[in-house]
Length: 177
Ligand SMILES: [Zn+2]
Image 1: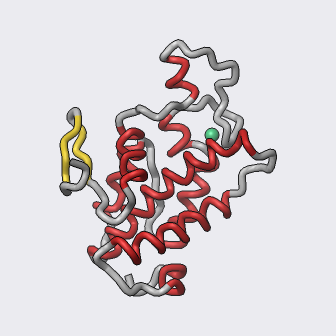
Image 2: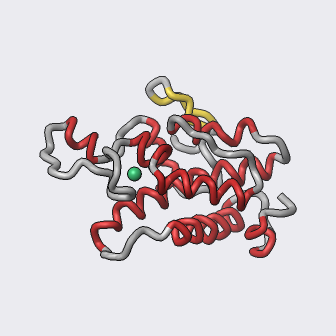
């Protein structure tokens, strides 16, 4: 069900990425449907949340758009992805902007597919970092989120995409894409 190229789910056209694992694709699908259990979403379901601040930046209320687009941590991650992949700024005002970003890129299909998956993995890693905040007392390290995206992206792109044979050094400098 999840792996046709486009699927209309409750009116949303989902452009499934073929090389990212189902857990990541399902995560962005839930993000797009606003079904991520952010503090705002839990409050709307009458679950008592004493602290409504975003666990990542601790400066604004947490909701889906915030945590993946306007949060300081998220926008710093997007800046990191911009400079790694040498692509124009990811100026996302909504989660839809993130998921559509690859469609307006110039360059090869391979590059577009790579960027599409990298954005999906970044959303998944941001959410994981957010969930881990409570378990470790150390502050969020944005460079750790970026290294995780890079490493998982390489693993999955080289194993699961149709573009086999990419080398780690090329992936890290995002050349020959
Ligand atoms: Zn935040």
